[in-house]
Structure formats: C-alpha cells, structure tokens
Amino acid sequence: MWLFVMEGQLQKVVGRNLRRYRLERGYSQEAFADFMGVHRTYMGGVERGERNLTLQTLERIADYLGVSPLDLLVDNAD
Image 1 (tube, rainbow, N blue to C red):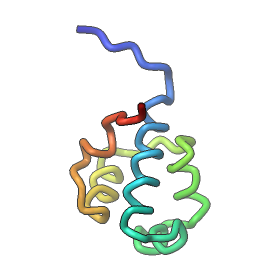
Image 2 (cartoon, helix red, strand yellow):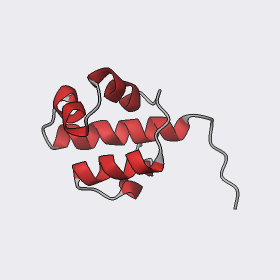
Image 3 (cartoon, rainbow, N blue to C red):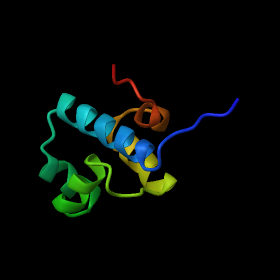
C-alpha cells in the first residue's frame, strides 16, 4: 500500500502533537526547551514543522513527554 504525503507534512504532524502534549502537561515552550537543552526558538521551529528531527531526538522528546514516539507521528487532526 502506498501512502502519498506532501513533503514536510510529517514534520507538521509531529509539531502539532508535540505542542498538544506539552500544553497538556503544563510546560511552557521555554521551560520545555530548557528541559531538552535547546533554545526556545529551536523548539518553536519544531512545533511549527520547520525543523527536521532525527529519530533519536524524536525518541528523546517522546520520553520527556511520557508518550510513545509513535504518538508524536500519528496525525489525529480531524
């Protein structure tokens, strides 16, 4: 089965999910970026889908949020 996705769409999905989980846990963008050891502007770029994450970084973010990496990759937008 072939799945055609517009280039960069997965980055946007990850960004939306990251933002949702971060807010659900009560982290500000700045606090979460500090926790991750990155600058707030980098984290903003991730949440806007402008940054291409490595799988290792995706795993690290998921671990900090207490979710599965797959939870960040699945598009639940309706």
